[in-house]
Length: 398
Ligand SMILES: Cc1ncc(COP(=O)(O)O)c(C=O)c1O
Image (cartoon, rainbow, N blue to C red; front, side, top):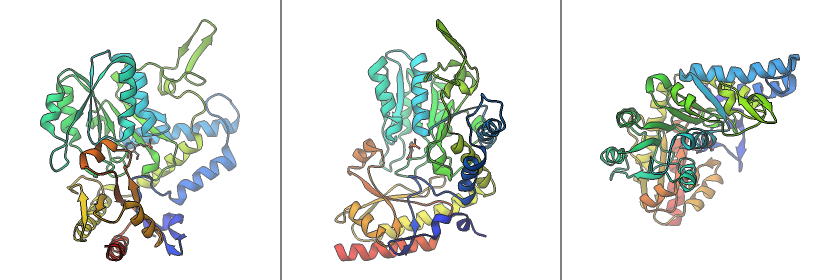
């Protein structure tokens, strides 16, 4: 059995052609084991978690909390708050930690390559409490300017930084960033949405203060993600959403709160999604992520070079060791959407647009790009088909 055999969607035809799915940075496909686990939960164990003593409630609670335990093991993390995804995790840091611990004039450091989900929450907070936002610029080769980063750290309280860019595939030197930030008294929040699918992260070893990620980019369901938090920062967080499950007692004169992660998980949680994510992590744990990463990076390097050789194409990103298997590019006369539609007619799914990174688009001097992103079930033959098809399209249009 190959990895591909585990993904039923890969058997479908799109516009009469076999599906070639190259939009993995947006979301990955789900192995059968994840689909089965979620169906099984709804068919056999559906109930609400944490309160009732009946059998189904016990099974639902066990399934949901098993996800947290899997995540603790996967990331070697002490505190795992389950959220709806990277976006909610970052917003949670802004509301539960930053709002309670920062004051007007405190600086939060961001970079020019952030996803909107690591920009807009900070802009909203800046409007509310007057924090200062500093955006670190990029070098000519689109890597982060570490001198500018160091200079920006004076007076900074938090560095909120993308671990691996969803547009460029560039992995930032986060180990260095964490050391430099801590040496200057700033905490670090990593947006690891694009990193966790490609590298096994040891949160304790890494020493970041917060790490945000989403299940759906690592073969898990949509609508669930998590925030890993170091203990001292966890203790500094104040409740954000109020409601059921996050309280110890409620009277009409006030409430007391849970002391564990439930404090930040008000309301009925994503139970089926938790069951699905736990299944995805079990499935992923059987795969050698590092050697798969090297295989996919080789495919991305080959693809980037082939695209560069097509007249009129410009490729962004460097595809160095550690970068993810993402290739963003533009053509000087074929519009990205035209290219994507023509590829779709051949069953090939790629992404176009600003990729929720408009400041980076401004830095690149483009409105949007085409982007192909590879994951575990992709292979060299698919990259070859992509290149051959794109060459034909460019020849016809140019
Ligand atoms: C780098 C990065 N950060 C954040 C996000 C937001 O993730 P989600 O939509 O799952 O919250 C994405 C999704 O594309 C991303 O690529």
